[in-house]
Structures are given as C-alpha cells and as structure tokens.
Image (cartoon, rainbow, N blue to C red; front, side, top):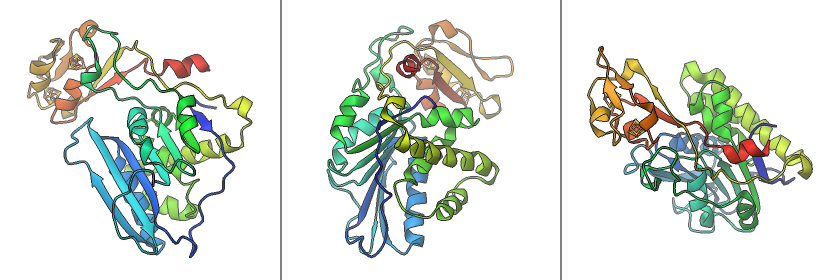
Length: 312
Ligand code: SF4
Ligand code: SF4
C-alpha cells in the first residue's frame, strides 16, 4: 500500500443512476488555483450530460490566481433548478488539497456524504509565522480520526505523490477522478473515454495510469481489513526543506522573482535565467512561484509528509 490511508473504509456500492435518481446528485470539487479543479468538474459534467442528465455547474476561480481557493459545484439529475450546492447537501466532496477539503466539509451530507481528499498540503505564504527556514506554519491540525468522526465515508489519498511517481504530479486530479469513479456508477469505458478527451494527447498514457491508480486504490481500501489500513494523522509537520524547480526554457528574465523574493535568494545568471543562489535562506514561502508570470518556478516542500512517513 502506498503512502495514503482510507479514513473509513466502506463496502457501499456505487451510486446507481437510473430513473430512481429523483433528486439532483451533488458533487463539490475544491482545491487551489493550478491544481485542476475545473478539469475534474468538466469531466464529471460531461459524463453526466452524455448519460442524459440535466447538468448545472458553477465555479469560482476568477479571483483565485495561483494558490488561491478554487471550487466547483456540479449538480446533475432528471431536472436541476439551481447550480449551487447548499451547506450539508453535497453527496460527494472531492478535495485536491487537505486544508481546502476540511474547510468545505460542512457542505457534505453528514449521514451519507463521501469525502475523497488528497493529502497534499499547499501552505499559503501568510501561514508562515516566521520567515526563518523550517519555522512552524499555521496550517490545519485536524487529524484523520477527527475527520472520520465527522463524515460517513472518507478517503485520504496521497494522490499527488502517486502522480509524481508516475512522472507527472499534474495528474493528481486524475488520480482523484479514478477514486471518484468508484463512487458514481458511470461505466468504466464512459469514464475512460471522457477523461482522455480532456487531457492533452501526449499525456493520455500517464493520465490513464493515474486514473487506474486512484480507482484501484479505493477498491483496495474498501476491501482491506482495518488492521491493514490504519487511520493515520493528517500531515501536520512543521519542518520542511524547500526545493525550487526552475524551468529555464520558460523564464523570460523579467526579474520579478528576483526583486520580490523576501530573502533575496534569487538572481539572474549570465544567460538571464532565474537561479536560486542562496538556498539556505529560502523559506519556501512560494511567492516566487505565485508571482512568476511565466509559471517557470515551482516550489516543493520536500519533507511535507512526515506523519505519513512515520506511519509506514
Ligand atoms: S519571475 Fe519567472 S520569468 Fe521572471 S525572472 Fe523569475 S522565473 Fe524568470
Ligand atoms: S526563493 Fe521563492 S520560495 Fe524561496 S524565499 Fe524566495 S520567494 Fe520564497
């Protein structure tokens, strides 16, 4: 088993979609800018529409920028009057980021709702109490057990790491789609056809693998004996090592990151490409990633899952 946990395994069958679906089915998808929330909602809306349902979708992402909150409501059924899901009425909550998932939990149906959440943490700059490297950050401290007590069925899945192991962490949202596919009774060919129609052609192979990983992981979690699937704490670690990934080919030498890095640890090199020159000063605040207009910088917090590591 990989570094993820089911919080509460269930043998519940997927939701059957037939004439008996008298009320709209509500799926809330949440995450932060750049994670692919909208793609997940488009795949689901397209599937439901192809299945003959009326679909209403509403989303907020215009104000989000990179790193900001993004959410999308998808409602489908024989007749849907409103595009938004009221508190306590989401049948499924899919979260691409741990704290965002917890923030939206009150929207989930308490008695029957299914919560599927990536354990990925994206800590905003304002959550850093101090800019010293390794300083503690304000971040959700709720444990998986606390979440388990709140919802009927929940899965905390390390989708980002699974996607990274496939060689493309951007496929984490498709890992979650694979997980979602076990909850909703659209046929597997329908899922696969729709997912592949929404990803770039050159990434179809990795996204297909990501989808299967998510699907298989949930299937395994549902059947694993509880002793094999201990509920683990959510990641709450405070020590981390920032690592910058700079894509030279995308850097346009604008110097925004150089001028706005609070720790002055970036410079342009002789080819006028941004370089991290003082890694020991970098706090992992991610301002450079958020402010780079060309998406040339990604900040990784390498030790961000210690609770999971310790539980292995
Ligand atoms: S902000 Fe982006 S494009 Fe501008 S110098 Fe930095 S890495 Fe290059
Ligand atoms: S290099 Fe980036 S992540 Fe590191 S301190 Fe500077 S702005 Fe923050």
